[in-house]
Image 1: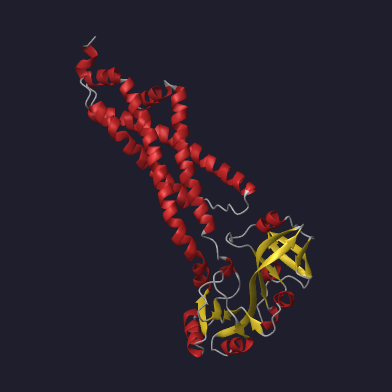
Image 2 (image 1 turned 180 degrees about the horizontal axis):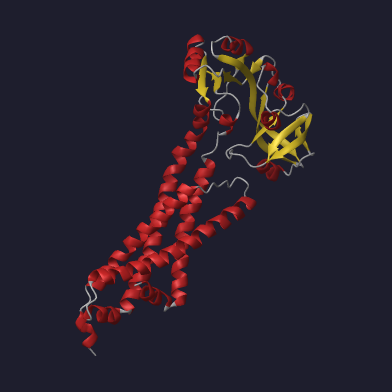
Length: 367
């Protein structure tokens, strides 16, 4: 079956190449869109990577990007008295304009007050706690602004030295940069006001119970777990992005199925007499259908491999041109697209298979 199917497909190498390209384009579209969604859906993950398990904000704050939270230090001191709370770290955060190399870039500055008893590991220090007069940025912001390690970033009358450029993280909607807490107070011009309180929960305490106790103690405060805080940022992406992704994936699936179906149908029509001979010598309908299905599988498999490799190349080139083009190719998505391609091959075989089964063996005896 496979040699016959392969011979039918390769009889017209140019058409086979064009058909593979069509399937590859469909796979490339589906894979790139899914990887782009995965990359963007990591937004907010930085709040789960910091050492606190709970985030205390002003009541009414929906998420870090679309609302403002202002807390007094007295509020955080009350939170620190709740049973199960190891420490409450004051956090300053605000969207700012960063001056660099004659241009300005928007960046979300964050600063943690390590003096509040924050458990400091080497990883936490290197990533979130720069020395005074320095700033830690990520590679996406570095490419956007042209800033590199040792360069100066300007915030009004304060100039900070880039201490480290870290690999691209999970944030796409807004780039995060970390500064020293004392520098942040000067940049923001605040005194006893902070943005958030990051709560480190004791190891022997339950996070949900501590969160409920904090909320009951002070109705002016709203308490998020680190996962809830991150999810509040991703909510907008999920609500606006998923419908678009569903449409694009559906379009890609239909295009791929149409390309495979048209190619196999044409190959079947052109070899009507050959299939007639097979039926005349006793070839069963199942045997002939397996030939058609083999043709679809070969074509779809070639297109899938080409499309997957193409999507990796396109994602890399796009990220070089547009730093915000963040993609994440996950094994489960590749497996899902491979399964969809298999379904696409089966569906595309239905019409050609019906054509084969309807062939009259007597056709071989006609002039």
